Length: 348
Image (cartoon, rainbow, N blue to C red; front, top):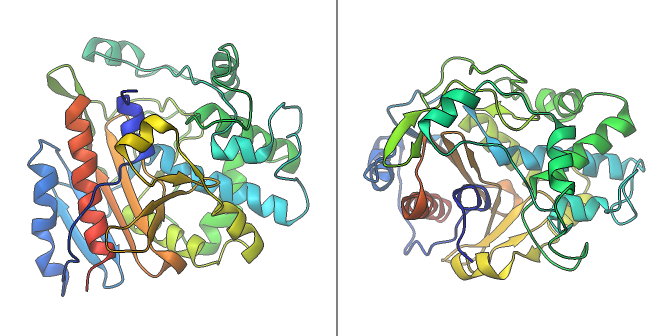
């Protein structure tokens, strides 16, 4: 199975990184980004904790960016908070659905996405202001046959998370964004994280976003997100969120343990990314020097986000790239960002 560009950027790679890196202070981090920018990636920023390590190339360090599938742990956290409150169960049928909540969050429904998009600069210009709803994208996915019986396999599915968002709204009577804001953003002080809705514009400061369409890079900054639940954030906010999540500040121990119960990803992805497993909105990958790395990467529409946090939330790395390359170049882009992430997580 050959991964698509969306799979490469959404599912994240594991690439051996070699020895641990000594990074005494922020002044010595600029060279970390060179393996990424050398590939033709325009605009990269990095934040790592502890030590407030920062590096940037062509992007303000506090730039806002679309986080794509890195939003999935936010939704999964709200769902697990509702489970902790006794408002839903993980393994019974979800309200009005033939899947369980666990299957929705763990990509084991068998649902096959049918997502809108563009493959050329001309298609981007023609479609960039199109608005897509949850109902539409769910209908497109459910019109396709299941790849396998629910619970018997693994396949990355955005539609499952759209269904989970509907469940949250039916149970709470409030928009998903209100639940995420009340339960996560405000308590953690994530003031630079929010929801663009149908606006095609990003809050400032932000980088320009470029996507490889054919042989050239196209500026795709201005567009209505294809994901109706799209989020915008910063590297600082994302690092704080993942450290709080893995540090037990957002979920009781039992429910954080449920989130961290993983299953292997499909065989095709295992060939490329050995050892990767998926929990409930969290990716788990072994670190080459021992231990594991948690997080959730995301990429689409010119932005790619790579994340990593150690057990207990002690260390975190967030990299935002304002370019999404295509084909083999996308694999090399992911590999380069993963090497940087893993070396920083294991630095001495």
